[in-house]
Amino acid sequence: MRPLAANFRKNMKKRPVIIIGGGPAGSATTLYLLQAGIQPLIIERRSFPRYHIGESLGGECRGALKLLGLESEIFAQNYPVKHGVNVYDPNGVPFWVEVKRRCPETNVLIPTATWSVTRSSFDSILLNAARDRGAEYMECEAVAPIQEGDRVTGLQIRTAAGALENLHCEVLADCSGQGTFLANRGITGPKVKGGYANQVAVYSQLGGVICDAGTTPSTVAGNTLIFYKQKNHWAWMIPISETETSLGVVVPAGYFKEQRLDKTEFLRTELLSLNPDLTRRVTNTNFLEEVRTSTSYSYSASNYTGKGFLCLGDSHEFTDPIFSFGVFLSMREGEFAAEAIAKYPSENGASNGNPFVAYEVVNAQGQDAVRDLIGCFWEYPLVFTRVASGSHQDDITDLFAGRLYGEIVEKNVSRAAMRRLMVARRAEAASHGKAAPASRQLKGLASTTL
Ligand SMILES: Cc1cc2nc3c(=O)[nH]c(=O)nc-3n(C[C@H](O)[C@H](O)[C@H](O)COP(=O)(O)OP(=O)(O)OC[C@H]3O[C@@H](n4cnc5c(N)ncnc54)[C@H](O)[C@@H]3O)c2cc1C
Image (tube, rainbow, N blue to C red; front, side):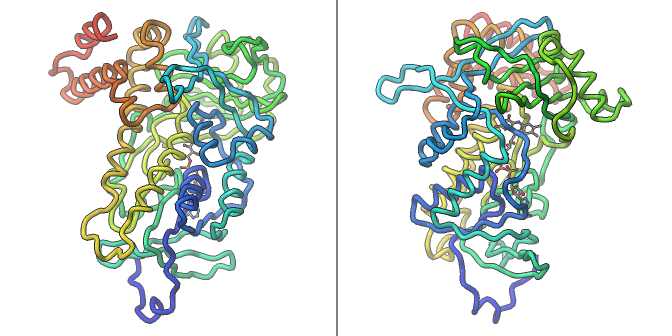
């Protein structure tokens, strides 16, 4: 943090909003801000199109793309159409969650679809739309926030030519993804490990994978398939074109180390052994691109808004990729952030408190629901499967689609039950078994609420 030289400040143009990062969070925030008549500056350090993992979109992503006027452009890409997700247990038995939307007039669930995308092109479509519609753009690196007292007032950047420059703004929006720009610089509360911080993801792409080839929603080729062997040991299969499939394996870091295999050999071995229904689909292991790994991807930062700043998407929290919430959460938080920024007092000196408290409260609803959903799946897979395919199937359909905010989630009975279950479970873990066992809660919940 460098104090701003007063004479420099006088000559500086003060921008309304500077956004760090041109991923889904940064582009969506920009597009919503432009709709509200605010023209932000995006700072992105990489040249687009750039590689990114995370190809399976949630159901409500489609709604967001429609709201942003991008649905037809996405259709034109001919991305595989995803009707839902099949989750295979260790014996190869699946449970199915279909992508459905809620009819605004009747509230009835209607089958719909979303996409599995190649992130390099998908993220570019969003970023190009933001630029074409009037956002200012600089390909350069965000280096440090500028502060005046407890207020963030700008950003120091390193230009492509290597020069340091100070830029000033009313609001700095951190959309830096796993770069966690503001959290790493102590502007937010501390960044703490998430529940899956000790997991490792190893992934690449293959051709010749045997995808489903049916015509009913649960058997079409574009669906996302998840396979698991045991708790925290699972794989994804996401078709990203007619000939390429994204495949990844996620395991505890200790297990990965114990295998003493390089990442390519590890991925090969796991794809051929992790789950029978996965193995039968893999016809070769000649990877189409480099095998990559992601570690330490699960974390959260508290107090991620304050005077003159807010964080969105992965820049403040990411739980786990298993049910494909990342892109959706980033885009939805972009919508909430733009609303909050549009209400931001134009004379920012007039606001003495944190103007973005309400934004953090809304976000927490979605992030908490995702954390509890994934936690419940791993802790109580049998109950979870029963709920997902039984009388409360609609609740699970809503949660998987991303209806995680407001009245709809407050009235979601299964969501409430998962909350109680996971609160009890965490209390039990924290007291090393001295609290009432979560299993007692589970018994009650399974027979009554669920
Ligand atoms: C193994 C794995 C699998 C996943 N699978 C899925 C999936 O199937 N579906 C799904 O929805 N999500 C998935 N995700 C999550 C998803 O990819 C992310 O949640 C999503 O990309 C977050 O979007 P974002 O805009 O917040 O961050 P990003 O997409 O990461 O964008 C951040 C941008 O900020 C830029 N940046 C960072 N620091 C700076 C800096 N200092 N200066 C300038 N620019 C900077 C970066 O270059 C980047 O372009 C997965 C995640 C992992 C780890």
